[in-house]
Image (tube, rainbow, N blue to C red; front, side, top):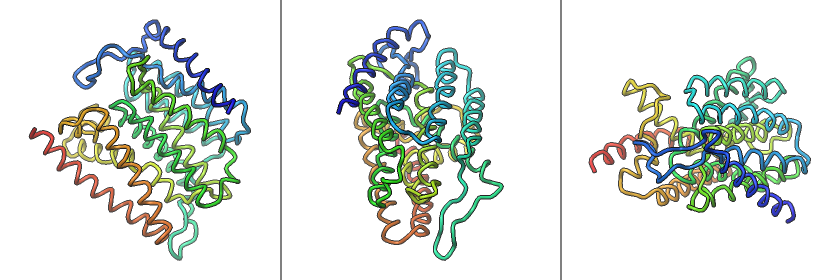
Length: 338
């Protein structure tokens, strides 16, 4: 319990420190046509979360890979904060993500196989492993960045993702092989503390692009680490079920932007949270609906996997993704009619 208390105290310290510095660092989010919050809000959530879990990680036995991921994330956080401050743009963010991704891959952590399906053994990626890993990590990093549009949503989805990993590990009885178990629990606790300040008006803070990218980045590597471990904590197909909603949303948005011949990285109001808000739901109800949907989807995938196996689980994922895209297109048209 002492570490939870230390985590809370250190979080509060960083909250006060960075909230005071945020105007000087230009880490302030101002309302505009896409951002409908009231007043200027410090964009320091990512910095606080990172520093809090980094300091606490020094007290735990982490895997070598997790140590590399955390150290590399510092570069992502710092360059992301620079982008938040002066707006360096999409290209800068993508290059930053690519560099950080390649650093972790250089440590030896890659998606080497995507699991066994029916009579097929583990499908090895071979020479495509590095390219596939880069695609997955950058894609998932941006999915969390894209969906960070209402209070509590991005951090809430990251929390659900990591909790899902822990639950699957418990079901599989592989927690004993999860070297980073204590770190993941403390990571979840830090996210819960952040959500309090993000969802209330008491010293309100936002993640910023640096924070949402960091959450997407670390969740990506947690999934790779646990699904590619020699003891295989979770099956690779279960890894994608841990991040169902973020993947579904970015896929839906990118498809609709391409169909409209719009830059896939250009901000708009086509995300699921924007659609729900335009349909009349307030931001808190919107967050609750999406979080509950994420939980339902994640556990639907887990149930399918354990009842029918990896291949039916993978097919179910693909079918649900198609249904989600169709649903979002229809809901978007309905929202625009209000």
